[in-house]
Image (cartoon, rainbow, N blue to C red):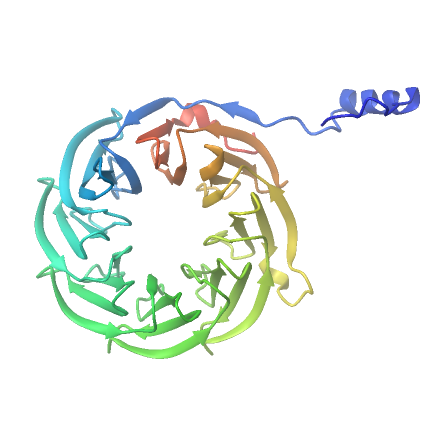
Length: 384
């Protein structure tokens, strides 16, 4: 805080400030935590996924040639016990948001630069199949059974469905313009697809592979998040500065909640009573009371974090929220009981995702690295 030269602080105010500081009433600055380790990667990372047993972290990586053209990407395999890269697996151009099956034996990598999905055998760290989908795919989402991978084609307006037994595209579903991301219901009977081109969510019956409902939402929907009870779907409208709440029985929007600028996909606590929405352009997090959605404004707190929050993650206990600040090169650790930022974790350049496992890992997108924070660095969480 800057104080103009002409401003006079009276003795009485000085005494009050001193008393507040002595009593602990003034909020302490967040503790700064440095990385326990930094792992160099072979290019610019986009996304990481942890194996089910937590022993390996798979990171999609891209490079750019000197003339600005894209060159083939790869998946870097990190041993989480040693923090060493044990393999670099060549895939297609600009690999993005991958998925791993429940047994950890197959990794599905969408390559947005060449319209393919690379299928990796994690036992041998080799690509065993390449499925042509087209459409600049950003996501390859596995259903609950692991028998199908749904791949939205952003530029072709179809969802390609890959049979994971044959690793080939066996069918496609025509969609509204610019399908982006798929979220499966807990029982796997439905898939929720955001169509950014027309601001809708489309509901897919996974048994018949047909669209059964198209739901208008706000502007620029990104990815649907379901509550733990499976009764509501939450849609972050990135350019509409709002969250659409959908009743999944009626497929109707029952509430639109105004939040900050450019919200990202929210995080819901296990009880389904609280939701946190990071707002990229505001550098804030909107905390929403899900028990009282009928209130005029269910946003109970607005929490200031770092610049450009782009990803959020709750710890296993649900008492600590970690918010990745892409433009602030940091992660804000929030105590969910108080809504206070108590720790700031320093990362590499432009982190875009945080992953929890044996340690906490930050994907530093332009830093060409992973920042690692061990259990000792994390302590007992943001409330400690």
